[in-house]
Length: 330
Image (cartoon, rainbow, N blue to C red):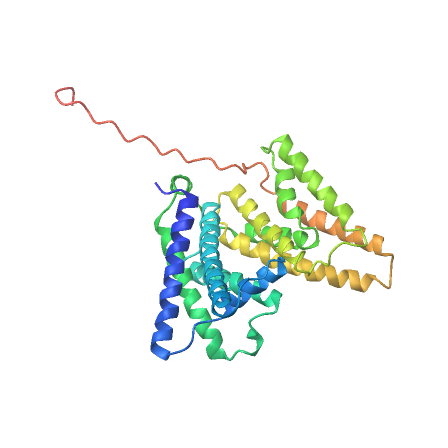
């Protein structure tokens, strides 16, 4: 059977093919030019790395185009692999929702680096231009979702996931808020509160949490909404929701989304708190109060159900009933 990694590459290749086919079909029907964004992004990335694209004239343009195409392939395969890993971790969206989420992730993976590098100029795009960019990525997401849902891994076959209950979703939201304040809580809190987690994992989680609590008090700590701080906090909230769902044996789609949303709330809520407290108390005191609130929220989220295993254990199916041997008793 196909494993998670191979399935992700297959899904990414299928999605990339679908995206390219829709893009070229649109060019053939409407006579529009090919997008220069991949080449511009690759050029800007090379310049940022201190290795600008060499050559002049047509030779340099060919290299820029080739690097842009390769960047698109890496993007397509990478997002497909992430979608497969998420599926294996228990995040199982309905088909249409999964197609939209995966397509949006692929679009973000292409657009966010370009925006960070200052290329593309998409803020001035009309609605038709945004639709022209969204449709190929939706085709990508549809193809990826079709592949990963039709090729379940052996572990996924043996681990049926029940629907996430409202309590689990709510606790995932609280853990996300805590991770928005202190990103390491997203992984550390479920690990430290689980009864069946090894001592080494708990020690590592405690160390990472302590390191963040200390680093947050330093004057050179990066802003929580910066390009370096925000993705880590959002990822912490999403992963925390996924861990709580795995502990409950539930579909992790809603808990992951709740954790992600909670992390956004916690990030900007914590920023608002620090700004409000700046003129009312010392910065260190405000930071310690935020630490306390985040830890309490994480405990409220993670202590219920902590006796349940966070490890993946396969469900053993009952043996088929034995049939009577012909010629023997009735």
